[in-house]
Length: 306
Ligand SMILES: [Zn+2]
Image 1: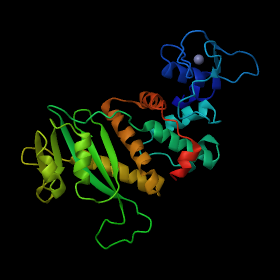
Image 2: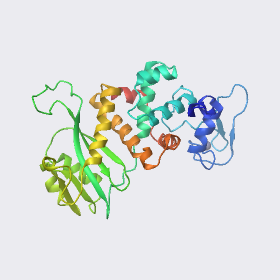
Image 3: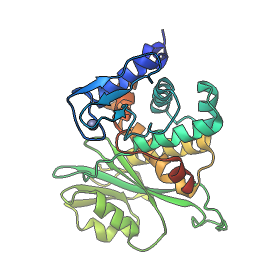
Image 4: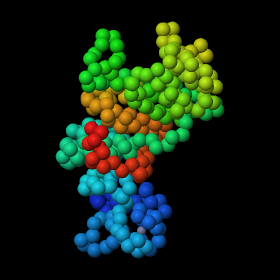
């Protein structure tokens, strides 16, 4: 029996029940008026699966309202399959693979993938680190910016990513750094890392000044081994970059600058919910399901950013 043989992946009633149990742990909530009483499940042959009626505001609703599933005709059981597959794959799943596995059109698969990435986006703005905390910061370059000529030995034609890794929680947060303006990396570090933390970076000059604002700043000199004198390293964040780059090259192949933040959310989500942290496939997929709320993404906005 594979995990994908569970009933909620194949039966629409069971799929809705699975989602409702997780998004409404204390019972249904009317998304129109916030009511929790005088709600009843609509019955009858012609009724849509998962439909409720609120007798306070007299409006119908389903658990899809206010989530990334809203306005989508894709059956809930296929959403659950797609989320399980994307959350559980090491390097991601291309829209083309999803299209073949689920039997939906390529366009639908593409749109589902982007909505699922939106659900993966960490909406928690809490700073990384804190007193006694250690945060690694590093940057990498990926892909090619359209219209920017490849300069020999330079990075101007590539997209820049700054990632932070909280050593205590094992979580990562990655930010697409738009332009190479002075202090941009420093500002990203300031906006995301608690000043009480120890900041660990490589020897790059743009960390020197911001480093003085933290409890401590340990610099790793790659020229002379990968550790600072007292044993700090940036190995974890470099390991994260290698997973990210293998996935982007091997699975996604092409990513436009406008979508990069969503792919970063996907890789951060998987890394921050990885099995080495004790989070296994079903739990990871449930974390993802809780992320669908409040992140409605319409087709128009998805395309406008395409
Ligand atoms: Zn209501």
